[in-house]
Length: 133
Picture (cartoon, rainbow, N blue to C red):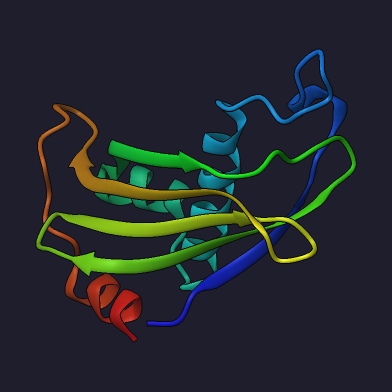
């Protein structure tokens, strides 16, 4: 499984008073990359919710912060499936500066749940195959 990448520009709204990316905003960058990754696999999350009544929720996030990103930096955010289980995924994610230095690295556990009661739901065989390709 090879990593998926997107680029994200750091805007004023992403930074703290010192012009450094506020730590919680890395979670937003990771989320954006996961959404684009799923889209690249042909997964329409809105349709999945409307038709199947299921979606993904983050159930665990482990993040290491390594270097500061600043206003106007162009970041590369990656997603790499690390483990695919029946109803959840472990994903390795990273944010890197333009020079390749890592800003933040995360291990994210995402579960597939039924929206009406938030109970775990198995990933479809089709989705499991797409993720594992």
